[in-house]
Image 1 (cartoon, rainbow, N blue to C red):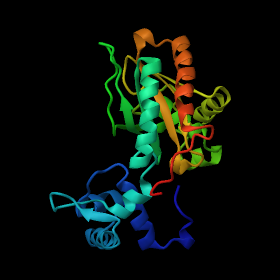
Image 2: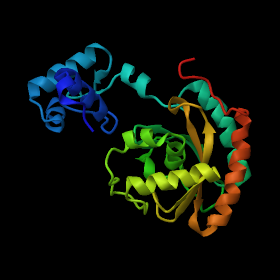
Image 3: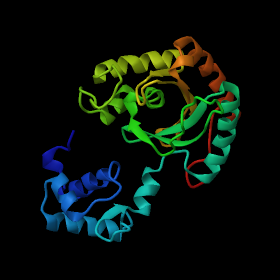
Length: 259
């Protein structure tokens, strides 16, 4: 979904599209940026230099490319990475791993993807390994669908502008319409289930953890090997996760970023 062409400021549009690339690329060279944006190398270089001057891009460690700068990271950073938030959520995770006996994690949205912000591993010999910082398409994980369910249909459509969803996923819902239907069911029951989507043999259940706005929302997720994670046991763990999430208080609030 692009802007109305008659109102587009081309250089601004190019800069915004380039900043979006940093959501999925750790580093970009001038040539890579030019190719992905379908612009000339000189245009890509000017835009990157402008972003660098304003702190939205920095030179990467190799010196040959650019990475997201501090201003862009500050704007895009979801809840869960701030030290004060991590401390409060850490207490919830400690309680959740004790209650469920399974690996638990907190997760946040960055654009249309889910990122694991923190977690605790189970002590079971056979357990799910925690992968902090790992990202997945939001619609293809229980944590992502939980967070999407707390948005309006219009907001979800803005994140997923195409009817066909990303195909590189094991989630059976392949269309935006089907996703919207599932999100309505999640809102009604208060939890989201996942069955071998991001990792074969791993089932998950997610409940809301914190935040009233998209900026500070988190999901609390339990990750269970499939042999002890049928639907009935996942629903029981959802209730255990809710008890842990309640440690943040009735509003489930965490400090605002940078507060």
